Image (tube, rainbow, N blue to C red; front, side, top):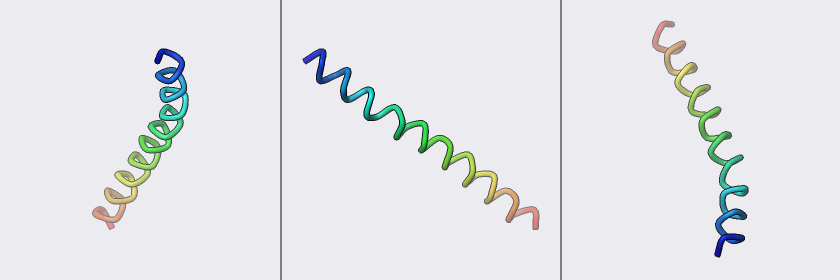
Length: 36
């Protein structure tokens, strides 16, 4: 179970990081669009 949990964490970390990066870009794009 511990090994499975570690594997799940390793797999989900890059997905979470990519999600945060995409969200940051999305928010920035939306705010730029609102300004224009």
